[in-house]
Length: 198
Length: 296
Image (cartoon, rainbow over all chains, first blue to last red; front, side, top):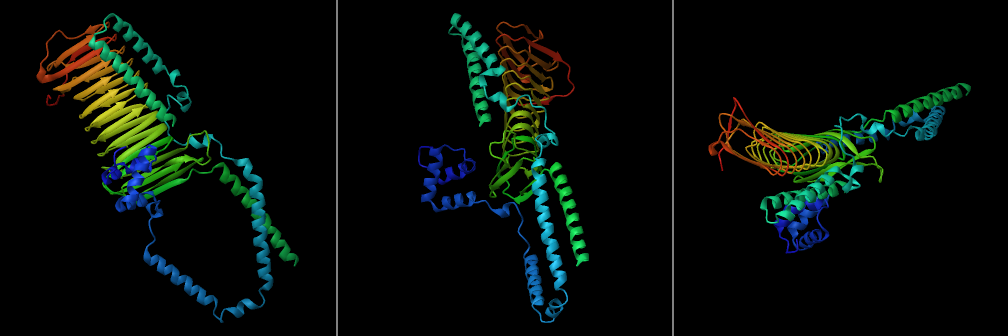
């Protein structure tokens, strides 16, 4: 994308830009255009923001109002003089005991959790055992050494056979077409393996 | 005072027992997080889905919204974002550098005309009913596509590919795993290296190229098809309708060629088969069902 970028280009390439799969020059061209075009700048801002509401529906307005009203009413009751005298006397001992119980429970829970937590790391087998995964005929490890894949050996053999024939009949159009097909398959496979590794 | 102390100790003891038991149960059976997301999108939303392992099932519906249900692997977390026109979501490992693939088992409901891009390393991609563009990539596992009308592009290295009832343009690029096309009525191009390619039912406008993989093409239900098949060393087997033989242009440089000794007619289509050293066998069979295709 070396030529000037238009608003249409920005809209067409936005998804790829957001996925981070444009080249640096292409991404920069889009950003440069956005800095000069208010519409495209707004489009980019909106697209790069992660709206929480996209993944969670907003609360109904009535629910929010009801909740606020209930909280206000409770706050008003708590400060009412009619309530205070019943808290003042006779319950001090129960309150202290209650606080001791709560604090002790929390402390005990924290101690127990710290003691047992390291022993129960989820086992790796749990990750995939519940999923219906079709048997894979290849693993990511197979992609480490591309030339070790049997398809590349097959492509190499086919290319050598065709080149040997072409030395005898160099102008054979059909042989040239066969060889071109082999070379194209090899280039495609190299690209796919490279993409898979990334 | 003594009574109060006793009660406190009882409560502490009970709390300790409860927390211990809860922690043990929680850690051992730590459930994969249940995922539920639903949000409105444009009818032709562009979506990118990246789930390294597990299963992604995509089903279309008549709503302008996306709903994601399922579960995420214990060591994986879901990410996502976007707006009404562009959405991206997937899973990645919780711990950076974790060698285990992040995984999920997701059912994604999308608008019929959504444009989808799905990538997996090892897992199952299953798409049903799409009318928009589809781009599907998988290294291993399987890719299944059914009842699609839009442009479909599939790339696989070791994933088994199955396409059923596709009426739009179809392009499949494989490597080693088998590729099966059934009742495909749009144009299709299939290229692979050593995988076996099977075409059943239709594929009236079709080009298939392999290097060492065999091709099994059932053209007995086609009339007016234009088919080109090419291998380097793979065998080619073609069934044609005995009552409606197409023009057969078949040759192999060094492989054996067997074909009916009857001349076909262009009105019944044209099949070109070429191989460098693979055998080519054409059988004329009786078929009750015929699918007419205009000759181009």
